[in-house]
Length: 120
Image (cartoon, rainbow, N blue to C red; front, side):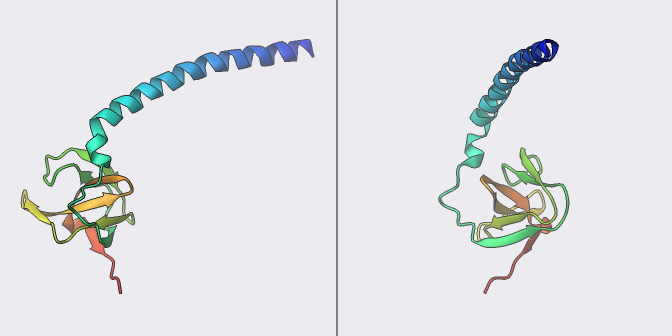
């Protein structure tokens, strides 16, 4: 029984050390990411994302700007539900881009990968 208690104590002590290192490393990553991407989670007040839509292909980039060179905020998969604004579509790089909202992210998505959902 003494060996078991000692083993459990040593295991718990080592886990506390490892856990504290892991948590501080993750906190640094979150802080760095948050400061760089704060604009991407702030909704644009001049755009109304009123049209519900589905992504119709896999690995569709949600971009920060409406261009092929725009930074990819995240990769959307087929069947993801997004909200878009069709009235403020932008033509760039030979493509049509919709302002798009997915969860708390705001960006642009290539119109060819979006299927609008009919609403009554």
